[in-house]
Image 1 (cartoon, helix red, strand yellow):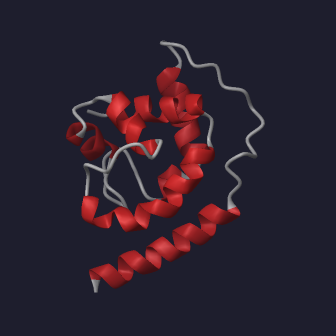
Image 2 (cartoon, rainbow, N blue to C red):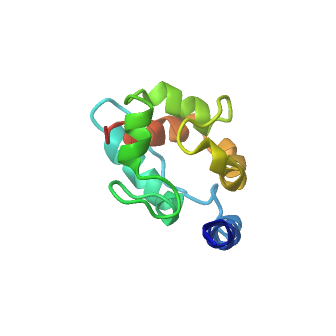
Length: 124
C-alpha cells in the first residue's frame, strides 16, 4: 500500500515537475559565504524541492535534517548526489522515485546545485 501511494505521489510530482520550467527563473543569484544559505533556500523553494522535502518533516522524501545528518553536513557529498555523480545515502531503496528529479537537477547551473547542497547541509 505504501509503495502504491509513493508511486502515485511520484507520478503526480513528476507531472508537476515536468510542467515546472527549471530554467525559467530570470533572477541572478550571487553566491557568497554570507548569502549561500539564503540563496540555497530561495532556490530550494523556487525549484519545487518543497513538494517532497521540508526542513523537519518527512513529506514524500526525507527531511532536510535527515539528509544533512546522514551526509554528516558535508555539502560536497550532497552536491555529488545532486549532480548525479554519487548514489543516494538516504533511502537508497527509493532512488527510482528520485531519478526524474535528478534529470532536472542536472539541467541547473552548477552554482545553483551547490547553493542548494549547502542549504541542505546547514540543517544538521
